[in-house]
Amino acid sequence: MDVRIGIVQSVKELDVELGGDVDRDKLLAEIESTLATEGTMLWLTDRKGRRVGVPSAKVAYVEVDPPVADRRVGFGVS
Image 1 (spheres, helix red, strand yellow):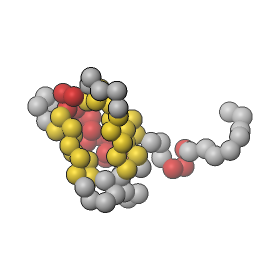
Image 2 (cartoon, one colour):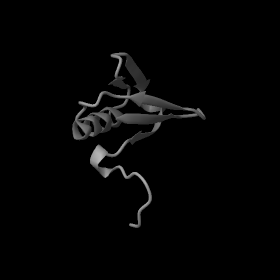
Image 3 (cartoon, helix red, strand yellow):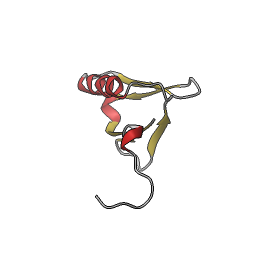
């Protein structure tokens, strides 16, 4: 699962590739609670075990990939 984080006053985004065993709902709840508290760090651990931290005050947005079942491949009409 990929998580993209926009940083305040930065053109680039931070892209973190998480392991496949991450519970999406639990991750979203953790992100939401961290960003709701001032002075905290949003910590994520990528597939290789590296920890990435971003101060919550510097987070502009967070984008989390949809569940695998919701991804569409090819051409289709909705």
